[in-house]
Length: 423
Image (tube, rainbow, N blue to C red):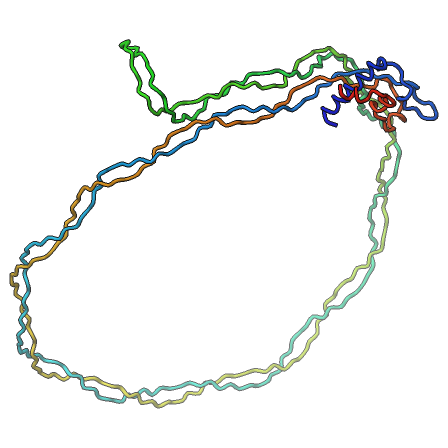
């Protein structure tokens, strides 16, 4: 249920209480009792203040700045680069080449090839392998195993259990309750109207200002500032804002504090101790002995004998021999002579020339225009209403049972319900 519905029902209950009598009187119809009569037959109520908030809308005018651009024609001089072609006379040296022939005698050596044979005979040694068998006697060691027994004495540890009483000290925590005085803030929130001052804008805006007069502090002469555009920082007007403020109410209250205090307790604890007792025992251990016995054996071993046999290999190698023979030859050699001849030539070249040309352009000039725009905002207005609260204690069975609404029970059977709702 909303806050507005609770406020309306509280006004209806208040009107019903005025018409019938005080709400604190016993009412039999409001008792939540079972058949076994566990609760009291009457229930009492009291009125309690409660704050309800209502939403309201307010429309105000807000200043909005817009930037408008104006188009203007501007004339300016623009440099234009032009290329011009010019000629110049240059004297150059042109080479003239002349060719003549001369006879030259020279001696050359012509190779003459002849084939001869060289003796490259050699001796080759070849291995011849022969296999034969021979007898070989050798001695081997054969193991003979013998088993015997001997007595061995060893010591064992036998466990003996005993129960002994030991004293142990342990620490337990016992709760101890003490009363401590402390300051408790039992205040509440209160609505307070505060005027907020808007901070000036950190960013300046371009605005049009009219003519203004000022006094020069150095000379004392009155100066007039011409109208025009200037950078100005604007500040919004102050606004009324409802804030929730905490109203303190310090009350001294005795609060029980429970602390855990350590306490040592000594108690006897039975402990089982295990003690080891030494005993000697005798056992027969088998011992295996190895004895080596010598034996002679005969075996046939193959033997390979290698003999070398020498053989003569005949070989004739052809050898090519080169012999140089001198010859005289005559040849014509071309000889080129170069001489330089002066000539005059005309060659063109290009030159960059700058010329200023007037050009019309359109530019946009910004201008700030202010206008009023309506803005709607919502704020909440607090209002105090009276709400009935049950003051009669009930048992656990009745508290767990669903409670019937209070106002329908109070208003049941009343003929002036439309008049109460209109209040």
